[in-house]
Length: 297
Image (cartoon, rainbow, N blue to C red; front, side, top):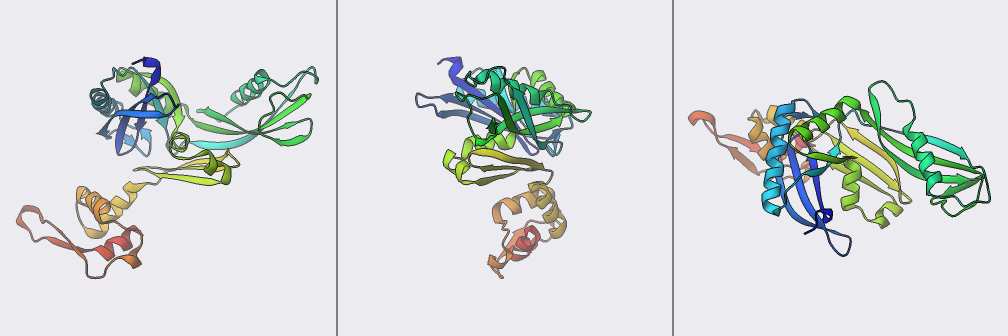
């Protein structure tokens, strides 16, 4: 098995850390070889808050994935999220020396590199630059200008930024775990590559990924990424509400959410009751499924 065909993804989430191993097949698709996960105790709302706990969880998840896939994992592609992630739009322009020459990849590269040189707020850095559409000599709405002739080449770009310290802490955790980072990918972009088809992106689609500490959003239209966002709210908020509303332990609240949770209270049955074992011989606590749904809703 060629190591060039193997790819490993690492998702450092608020509630769990996952490592997944895949192999590119002859059709260009990814066959999953193995997956490992570990509880995440050092991440809050997508941001590393405890280096050692995060390192230990990464090592555990990677070890499980390596054993299941029979692959020696050294290099990983890492997802990044968190409330520090921002997105903005910017327009770039270059003037070419000879309008008779065809526009080539080097012209596109010049535009993209110009975007990477934008001055950010202190403590921020550019993570991704996505071309949206181009203008060639006042001809608007061009998706791929390569091969066209023109003097003035303009481009609209979707730029994603994040905190330098947040990215460095991710690199530090992965390195301390004995791994090398191949690249850092915004998690909603990675999710869209995994689950969205080209037809959906062309027609227009919003991808929403609700995690434990954050909710990721990516919006596509005409095959182009239009907007990305990371909202610092996730499933843990619901767990905390159930814990307080039902006066149960956090572990019990999470189990209630997973097994019996519903966001539509009107569809819950009036007479359906869940019995929670009492602590140290105390009476069991009875919780209405409808009340549980009202808390979640």
